[in-house]
View 1 (cartoon, one colour):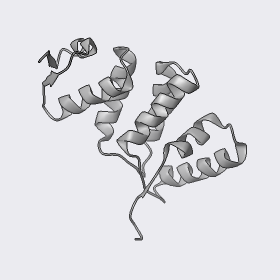
View 2: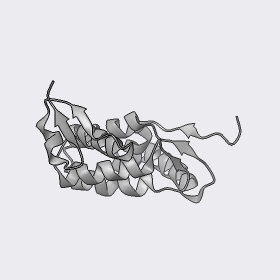
View 3: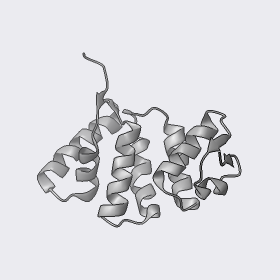
View 4: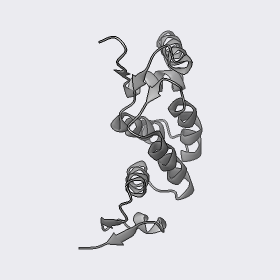
Length: 137
């Protein structure tokens, strides 16, 4: 349907960021320029962000601060749609500042945004978030 945002996959973002296949990276760059200008809208699913973060961290051995530096501008593109840009930004911030894995940072950011303050978990990383109360069942 015209006007509907198309979904963007992790490999598009990774080709753009890594430039490991110059022909594809160029095409991905052109797409993201259209997204930046607002000429095109794309939806970036939360799981795709997780896939990009995991791939950059575990496979390409990028430090968390560098991952944040790479992803923040992409999240801000005019035509980039997410379930919540503010949650993704906060998750990136906490991912670096609190030195937790992406999933914990994203869960914490989602909880705070949704005014949910309690989580059942044995994961002590949640103790790093004063806004959240971790409960062991």
